[in-house]
Image (cartoon, rainbow, N blue to C red):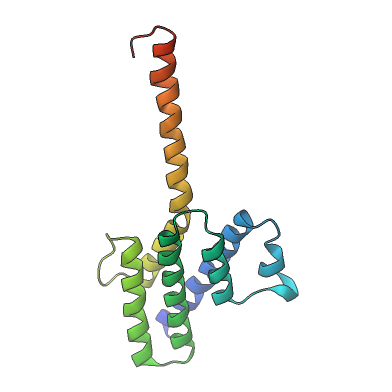
Amino acid sequence: MNTFAVEVLTYHAALELEVDAVLKKLLPFAEKITEGRGRLGFQHKVSVLGAAWLGKPASADKLTVALIRFNDLRNAVAHNDGKQVRACMEGLRKACRSIDKDLPADASILALSQAICAYMGDENLAKMLKLLEILDEIVNVRMPKALGGKK
């Protein structure tokens, strides 16, 4: 059995579960497109994710391109087209390096999958860190000054 093909198919399924999880946080009735008879295909879910993204539009674009490139690779693997697989892998690596500049040029399929998953959470993480920074400023700087403290 081709272990690379197994990895691609497994990580693609894992990414789809992650996309579903993000959609469930972004959409009030996400189950209408992630479950049952109304379930959308991977590419349609990626399009909805891009449209519902709460972060910057450029961030959504980078994420959706990486997810679509992963889907392209999955399709090439499923059709057992070696030349297409190599081209798709390079396209995926390029898309993933746009979201994680530290990825090596020969990043593994696992590293690429992890980069995409991490990026899906980065926008929310960035917002949370900004909120914590603001709270830190209020609690540790402004409040002590207002109350006559030394900070």
